[in-house]
Length: 96
Image (cartoon, rainbow, N blue to C red):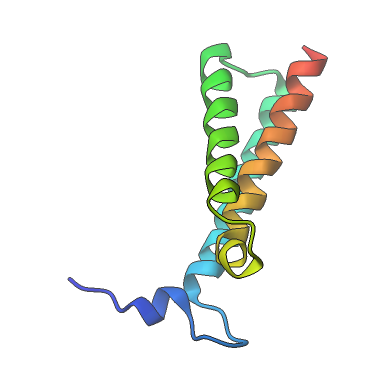
């Protein structure tokens, strides 16, 4: 089954594609999943370390490739999600 790129990417201009909406939804769900871990202290140390390293390298890989807004803007939901998790994970590492 082939999916049209225009469905996921949106049109050039003011409209945004369904992929962007799905990205923002995923970011909210993923970062929201971190809150119970913080409040309930339900952290697996190895999973925590791998998630922190993975999210840090993911953000770095996007930003190192290009800092031009036209390149960052389509990836913004994922940059916000991963950097938000890095901040939450850093907060957790400081309090525990």
